[in-house]
Length: 423
Ligand code: PLP
Image (tube, rainbow, N blue to C red):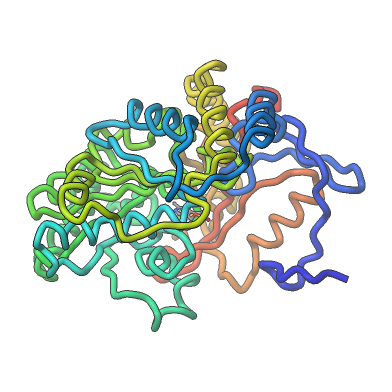
């Protein structure tokens, strides 16, 4: 008897009992190479000794203390570490329990910032098609995955979606990659002018698009132009690094490689590496000071925010990145992965594109290489691939997404940073 309300009601899932390095084991003793860290979560594999020791120590001392009453040393140290590493003025960390909570916090913080500044007419967000920001109602509203949004559309706050920067599908043959990036970024300006720029709170985007489009990087100069437009119209820039952040692309923050500053950044998955549920939003001093010198209170909060055990685990995760020099390793291993995938699959009749950055890669599947026609979602291709891979002892992350109204498929690979070249 299975009383769990599963994501897919009819799946017959194996029982996971053990994790060791990059492998997971089920109850029957079968090993699975975890090539996607679940959903880009398990960046240190499944049995990291330092993280386990830190968690044990913390639980022995104190498992939980409500953040309305106490801070913990680990939370203070983790916040300091993150803010020292973050580009620009991102100096204030708000800890939560996952990616969607981080996004909800960011959306609400951005709105409250303008209310306290006396600009309460700012009520709208702009985001991108082919984006995913989480499954709670605020996060789903700014997300651009049409399939996920559809049943809940009447409940979602109105949000404007502009094109994603997705050269493989949308660049014209006649334009350069740079010009395509600028043209796409300029859609933000056009849309802001249509909406009335002083009604807009923020633009939100993933620096490298994860689940919905499959490791899609922006063209050089795209985010710089986005930053300029946001500055020109006083609109905040929220970067969602829930999936692509925390070293996944080879730098701790993915947007370091875009050479821009954000007003708010959200992180989650790799921050806890799966050892504990955790997420965070990091805001600039300007935003924090406006609220601290205004009402002095951010109208938000969750029971498990800043959870003592999660803080201890995440601090150990970030320390392991440094101790084991894992971020340069991500770049090196990512290049090897890209090369091997290209050698093996570029000529495959159903592989359209192989892309990504660091250990965040995707293979896009298409029915027709010349027209880039995707397979229909009715084919349930992603489920078939997932099941077949698991039969073969491989965890990868096949997804179906929407590409300008058409359905598409890709397989996301986000292996642990400790993966060896042979593995
Ligand atoms: N934002 C991005 C970019 C994500 O990829 C995800 C999850 O995949 C989320 C937000 C939501 O995070 P969570 O599933 O932890 O709520």
